[in-house]
Amino acid sequence: MSANLVVTNLTQKFGGLTALNNVNMEVNFGEIVGVIGPNGAGKTTLFNVITGVYHATSGTVVLNGKQINGLKRYQITRLGFARTFQNIRLFKQMTVLDNVKMGMCCRSKCNIFDNILNTPRRRREDKAQEEKALGILERLNLLDYKYDSPASLPYGEQRRLEIARAMATDATILLLDEPAAGMNDQETAELLKTVSGLRDSGYTIILIEHDMKFVMNVCDRIYVLNHGELISTGTPDEVKNDPEVINAYLGKEEEK
Ligand SMILES: Nc1ncnc2c1ncn2[C@@H]1O[C@H](COP(=O)(O)OP(=O)(O)OP(=O)(O)O)[C@@H](O)[C@H]1O
Image (cartoon, rainbow, N blue to C red; front, top):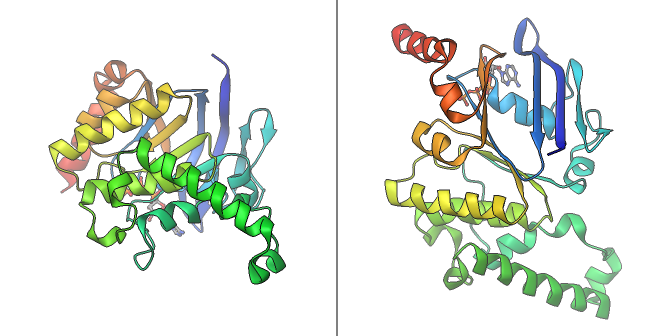
């Protein structure tokens, strides 16, 4: 398997605080990779650097052989990254279907005149987008909600809708920030099926998660961060038996 994404010696400083310190990571095509670690370990910062929210203090992020750190966020999105966030960020005043269509804006071939004059090109694109969005909703078992407001959906469905919108960007790499947060057991089991199904259909998935049962069941490999340092990496079994990892989590418990 060849590496899709290669992070090398990545360091991110915020003033005197080192949120990431020389972090190395490789993600292969079609893998589900988990990023775990206690609160404040640097997980979200890693996502923020990969997706261009922050420009790394030093180090590189390389996608398919091309360095992407330093690029603008929209350029990184166009290369095939999409992400969901810890806190659900849906457009509540729009329908479920329109939320998914919003994900396609970054690929639009229409210009401002097409939009104002509702030209044939605009109408053709609308139709194609609608068909594609319906397909994604069907795939994520959300089709019955297409004309509903996202706010009216059960929590698990809202989280899946975020993934649907990320897929609509034509992403090949999905970064999911705590996708199972706040879910009950049934919703988590459903999410596990969804995420495994996406991997099986060719997506590469990187996820941050605190729900250890979910992480251990869904991930092919895991990276463990603590205080901005990579302290362990391996299969779920390797990581969960690593004394460094156990110490990092127990240490946090003792600090409380
Ligand atoms: N924009 C920022 N400015 C200053 N400090 C920041 C910024 N973003 C993150 N940090 C700090 O960097 C460290 C890592 O934060 P980060 O949010 O990446 O951790 P995390 O592992 O995602 O934590 P959690 O599991 O609680 O979400 C923390 O000490 C945080 O306060």
